[in-house]
Length: 364
Image 1 (cartoon, rainbow, N blue to C red):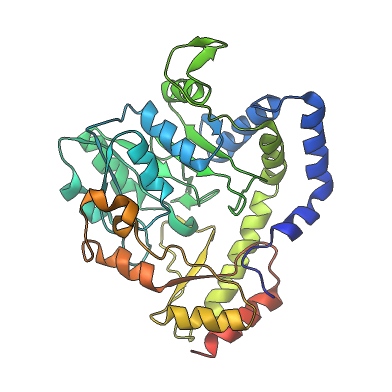
Image 2: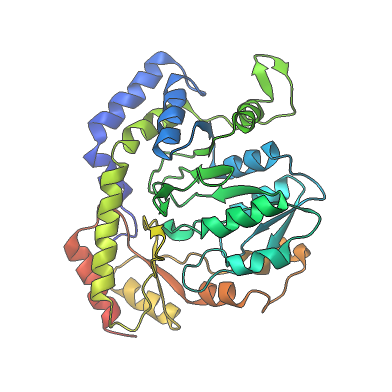
């Protein structure tokens, strides 16, 4: 069996360091926030070229607090894309604001920047581009439009640890950048976790309070806050794993290059790497109009695959109240019907990649 993701072998490769780090937290009894989390905040923010890092319990919480720190709430609108994980949109709704969608670019699968201006109204307060699959959105025009209209840019970088746009690490390009450390991410915890990074000290101060019940000093609550703190154990684990992220990223990129080469004449469309992009391949997604048949064939060969994502958010029943209908975002809808994610993780062997490619090339 060729796994879609191999977290067990990843753990085994760093087991002694992970076990030591976890035991250190258990002995310190710093289970919520604590020194390991604070050290990880500093290290990850620096890694992403940002001045401040605010660690929280999930990537969704990171998005939620970033929106709140920007002052977004009921009556406001936030521009984003429908071809994303549901959390992007859920975080906007949590604030009481309304998500306003623009379609994706059919090559990059990220926000089509040419559609942003038409979506701006007097109620628009922010733009939330999604760096999907590990490839950055086209940030320069997004930031330029935002600055011209007085909008905040919040990057959904949940799939984009170490991703670069024109040589700059994502998350530090807009006003805030939000990361997830869900176990399957390129930098994943052994549980849940997230972080917002920013250059803005006031945003950072607000989010630090909001994640810890709105208090800046214990039992002195300045804001109506949340219990969004990161666990000490997760902070310790992520500090260990961060030291390996460059190595793991290069392994992913090497696997992606081999996939590109071997699938060149396969009949499926391989990822398009944009000229501004340093792609980290959180997901290696190919495109086929016969996706279900291809997925079934690979499953029969004991090759695991995934679909990211089968239904765009504007067509999800949970968000029917937004008033969108089929056909409103044709590129998102087409991608949702055709994308298939092949096995991708640092632990894959070259032989496994070759086996996957051979199965795909046989056709359906």
